[in-house]
Image 1 (cartoon, helix red, strand yellow):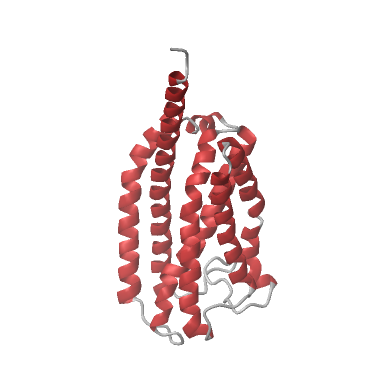
Image 2 (tube, one colour; image 1 turned 30 degrees about the horizontal axis):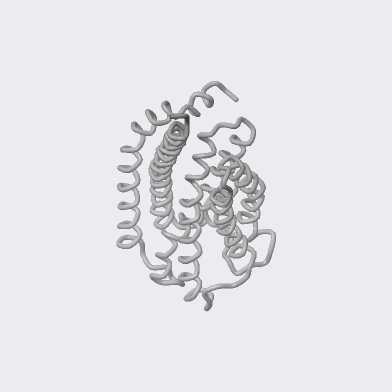
Length: 248
């Protein structure tokens, strides 16, 4: 592992970096999400087919992107933990899981609300929706494995293995609309031949995606710091218990 990445695994160095990054992440998240929401709700014209229901897209699509992005981050961190045994990578993966689960739940819920007026149903068991639901269960499985073991190390390894193996679901989600015949529309932004969505909708959509990314960075840093604090408290309590159990 490069020395730079090794240095980032130091809790002290991480806290220094987080202290500098956090204010900027919060400001960016608030500014971008606020701008994107106003643009999407006020200035974007209704769709000629879907009308105003298309505005759900500005929450649904960035949430779906972030659900996959968070899992990719979690899988990379888990692989780092398994290969290099860096405890901070394990803590960061644990911290990312609930955030990714929330983004995935938001994507599923807003997708259902958008699907009812568009498809006439809240849910269909097509490839895209089912694979995103599997992603949600992978997040839940990761969080369960972290807490089910009395031995933190064993729980971390089991959760890390699940995260790495589960990453195979990410390309399935991405290409499911191309590989199978589904109700879900094909990609309209991340395409080899360029976006097919009109610029009046594309720009606020990208701004919302950047805002959600900044929000993830901020929340993730906060959660990692909380995990580090909880780990320190746990170590101190164990030391105190060991001293109290010693010979008087």
